Image 1 (cartoon, rainbow, N blue to C red):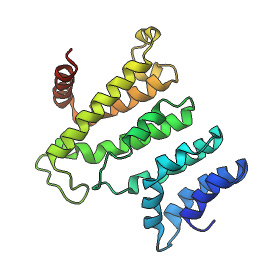
Image 2: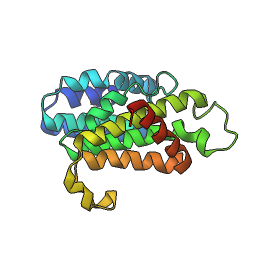
Image 3: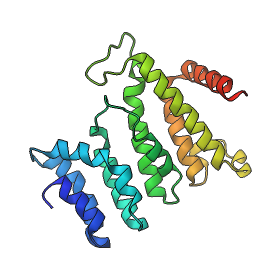
Length: 206
């Protein structure tokens, strides 16, 4: 396995041990390989990730695949539909496997950086980190906020009332969703989150 493309082929086709070794090798190749087509391969793998994932039946292979995707995810084409993988990542947030859920948390949290940079950096202008205009980022953030709240409501249990901090919540899909929301609050700030909450209430008729 000398290329990232070959690693993903092995993740999807190899036996349990071969798949696990291939998933671990992705990181080494990402930072250590000088292959010319590495970044094109990465973008192609990420682009078809949801389609490839849905064909995987074994839990251990799903874990290897998602873990490897999370390593290279930050290199996807951000300017072409930066939220195109969100539906898949929301699905992963509800997965019974905690490793898969945490990989989704990492990927969504990473995505929040470019989406919120204009909020955090006074006078920020598109270019470099992201070409998204504030209006585009606002629309994606609001959609993300709505979807995360709906997910949170769908997996909430009365027993969670007793927990004051996210870190003390039982390991669960609810905790994973709350981790992403907490990261969003951290990057957006209270004022912006209040605005999102008000928009959410108006749209939901609350």
